[in-house]
Image (cartoon, rainbow, N blue to C red; front, side, top):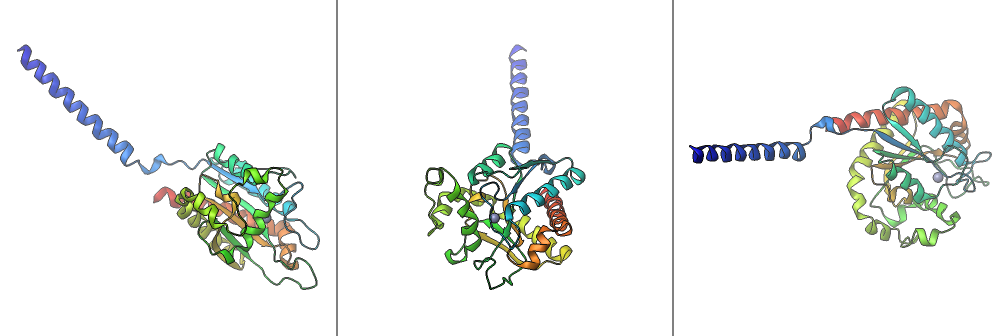
Length: 273
Ligand SMILES: [Zn+2]
């Protein structure tokens, strides 16, 4: 009798063990869809302080990016109050590129959005820039000659005090070296492209903007963010028409609304896939 009950006990224990293994496999192997929580977005207003970014005839990129970032923050609070918005800067101050990525990583952000303005090499000189529209950059594979925006945005590091130490291994002539260094980042590539495509479509369909699409370049500010990340070139500040749009309330509102709508759509898409 004693022997039998011991046997029964061991069967119960074994069954319990199997049950626990099964439960833990179910929990860890296939997490339920609702387990993913989209909690935090980092909004990064490009440039700032001693780094004005690109400029038009009468305005600087750093002021446009901050104005749009603040509008995104306010709109998020109104329409997606359950999502925490972290700003890399809320004033006209200089923030190093790798510090911006650090802020996103420290806050365990689910999405990093860096806001910028585009510009063509002729600046605001005699030849007026006719180029216009949005461009969305994600960090990834690219051809060296198709790096114009990344090289311009990356040049912010030369204003930084310790850039040689902080960006060791970065070679402007060969940004592919950086891609190899950060190969692990490729795991966020697909989701970055997904968000970029949603946002790009919104700019075109809802704001009637021209678009150069979603492109992959070696953008430093995105290179060290451990989450899906995009850089939005919201328009050409050295095109007179676009400079007016980028500085206007209606233009900035439209851009901010597109960004917030895209965040909503992106959250829904990743929740159901
Ligand atoms: Zn910029």
